[in-house]
Length: 294
Image 1 (cartoon, helix red, strand yellow):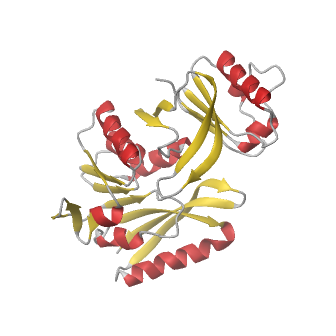
Image 2: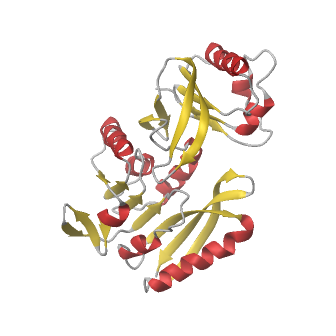
C-alpha cells in the first residue's frame, strides 16, 4: 500500500512529481489536474495533446515513480447520480482498480465506477476530529466508505451508518470495512430517501427508530439538497455537516436555502461555521456548512 499524493491548483508545481521529467512536467497537465490514488495516476490533458505525447508522459511517470503501477487518462468528468467517470489506459498495468491509503485507512476501488476524491482527505480527518465519544453518526452518499471508515477509525464514536446508492461503491465499501477491521461501521445500499425514513432506518420494510448525533452530507453536485432527509433523523443537538456547490457570490443563497429547509422541517438551527472544503472549477467551490439543531 502506498501513500496518497494529490494536487489540483492553477500553476502549482509539485516537486516530487516534477523530478524525473527531462523537460519538467508539462504545465498544462499540472493546470488541468492530476490525481494519485496509490498505485494509479489519473491525468487530464488538453484536447489537442497528441496520443504520443500522452503516452510519453505516462511512461515517464512509471519510470520516475516506482509506487505508480498504472497511468490513466481522464476522458469524461464525473456525472450522474452515481458520479461515474471514464478513463483510458495509457501505460503500466491494465487495471482500473486502485489501492489507496489516507489517514491510516486503506481503500480499494474502481476509479471509473466509484466516485472518490483524494482532495477530501483533510476534510474527512477534520470531521472525524469533531466526533465525540459514543456519538451515532450517519453518512449519506457514503461511496466506497471514506467518511464512515475514517470516522470509525479515528474517533471514539458508538456507531457510523453509511448509505450509498451505487451497488459497485457499496460492494467496495463492504470490502474496505473488512480491510480496516472495523466493527463500528454499518453500511446500507439504496436510495437515501428510501433507506432513511422519518425517525429511523427502513430496513427491509421494518422501521428501526434512530436519531443521529451527527450527520455527514458529502452529497454529489445535484439540485436536491436532501436536507429534509437529514432533518427527519435529527434531534436537539444534532450537528449536520452539509456540502454544497456554489460560486462565492451565491453563498448567501445557499445559507438562505438551508434556513428555508429547516423551517419546512420545523427545526430550529444555528449556522455554526461555513468553510471552503475545495474548489470544483473556475470560481465554484465545495462549501461545508456546519448546522446545529437547537
